[in-house]
Amino acid sequence: MTDREIPDDVLDCIIIGAGPAGLTAALYASRSAMKTLILEGSSTVSQVTVTDMVENYPGIPEVSGFDLHDRLRTQALAFGATAKMEDVISMENTPLGLSHGWTVNTNIASYRALSVIAATGARWRSLGVPGEKELMGRGISYCATCDGPFYRDRSVAVVGGGNTAVQEALYLTKFAEKVTIVHRRDRLRAAAILQDRAFSNEKIDFCWDGIVERIEGTGGVSGLRVKKMKGNGEYVTLPVEGVFIFIGLDPLTEYLMGVVNTDKDGYIIADSRMRTSEKGVFAAGDCIAKSLRQIVTACGDGATAAYEAELYVDELKGRPY
Ligand code: NAP
Image 1 (cartoon, rainbow, N blue to C red):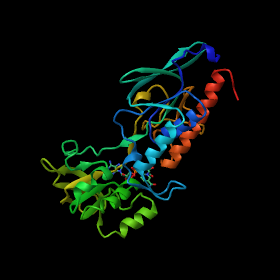
Image 2: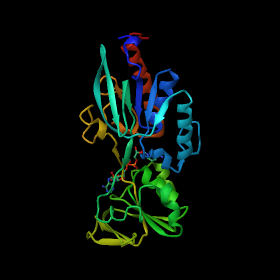
Image 3: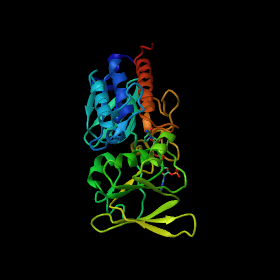
Image 4: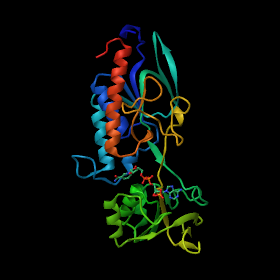
């Protein structure tokens, strides 16, 4: 296929998602002069934007998540990528002259491209206990940066034992009088440095081996009912006015189901070159199956995906490196 045979409306690359992975992919793709469209999603919030402070991005000792995201976005758009706030619903293989490309359907329009990079990340997981849906936004939160200031001098609970739970619990101590971390085991999963900070913070205490049974309250949270898994299996009710839930993530990959291979949890399977099971579809960041989900690994994935997409598109156009 030559350039002339590709219809004008066909882009070189559509990037779905505008977190660190998607924005880095956009930076690399547009800097390589690929015709690039980023579909940002109309309301999805990248996890990085609600992270209070990032202190493990190499070369930048401390930056707020929001600022880092803003810098990544400005840098990506400076090289000519177009961004649209539309929600991707589905995508399908599309014949294009002698080869094929992809049609990406959003809530507003359809776009065609020779390659697609899926970088949609993951969303916070919910507990699924009584009271959670009913009290959402009225004492239940999945974002300490957004809602922490509402809990000045109050008692709150944080559910979870990973990096996010501990980091956000530490952040909440800026406002709350007391923060209780409720964890289903007797050991945290979080990195040692975060654990050390939590154990030495006087405002944080722990409810170990605790399974949340329900969130209590009418009109607002008044308590957290927890079953203790060790001992007699007794119940305790923590008198808290806020419950912050950080129990991990689920990938945002529904629009790709049946299109590319995923693992049993819905994470996209990509190889070390970020190639998925389908030609022309690459994936990057938290939505892929991998061991370390960090901003820096998302950026690395994004750069690799864009580089591989460029090689792929050049080959389709008959001008391989
Ligand atoms: P995570 O590492 O998967 O931890 C989830 C935590 O929630 C675990 O402690 C888990 O318990 C608990 N949990 C899971 N399902 C539960 C349920 N149904 N009920 C109660 N507890 C439940 O998730 P994360 O902390 O959100 O982190 C996500 C990714 O982002 C990780 O890769 C993490 O390293 C990364 N991250 C990094 C940083 C940083 O480097 N500063 C900050 C934030 C996030 P178990 O321990 O028993 O499994």
